[in-house]
Image (cartoon, rainbow, N blue to C red):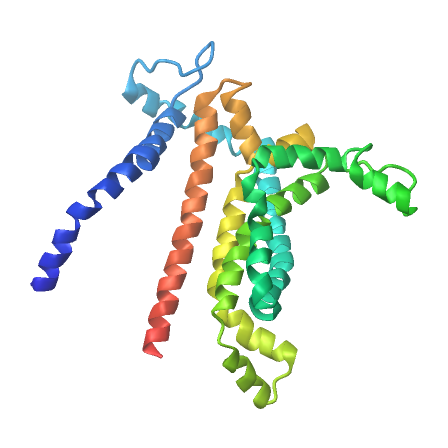
Length: 298
């Protein structure tokens, strides 16, 4: 009873948190859901609904969701999904050696400097950094100049406005979000476990995959979530570096709200994307809870 009373006493302290979440997350999400069941007005906005019962009975309320599964939009969704997956894998492959070196091999006097270099991109606007990549990747840009100066390539490469440029921009933008969680996990790694694995006859590769990787799994999962979810809804990088040929879901939603002025259809796609992300987070939470229960039983 005492524990139950103390638990109820904590609820008033959570009231400000629930108010903030309700005002800035739940309320906009509910508004977006309601708008997604409407139809586009003649001059943009939403068309007035004269009869809610007739609107639901005729199936007009689900027009935007039925339109979102047309082949052209499914192709955009598939492109967004695989580019987010590739971005996440590339960030993981690049970040793990960097985080491993900073956490386990770098001298202590250099750790703060190296971590500062990882965080330096946050000091500049992401939009400005994306514009900088446009100057680097264009035909007359820095990369083609260096390739021509070094003799590796005499004809300029068409890198800008391609999916390769989009991947470069996504990996560059999301890289710190993978390095920092991995560093946090690796920095807490007990090195005596690596020494014990070596004493038992395990080589460096075996120790890495059987000791280091399992113990840093929380940091890996956190980094994957922090990279995959923003990459799935990214629109600045694909708009500036990819052009119209590399449209992602984020660009599609933006265009519906700005150029097409079709807020109901844009809201439907945005809600579907939000629901997919929430389902992924719920699946991970369920997996983590089950894994925790299994570890407690063991």
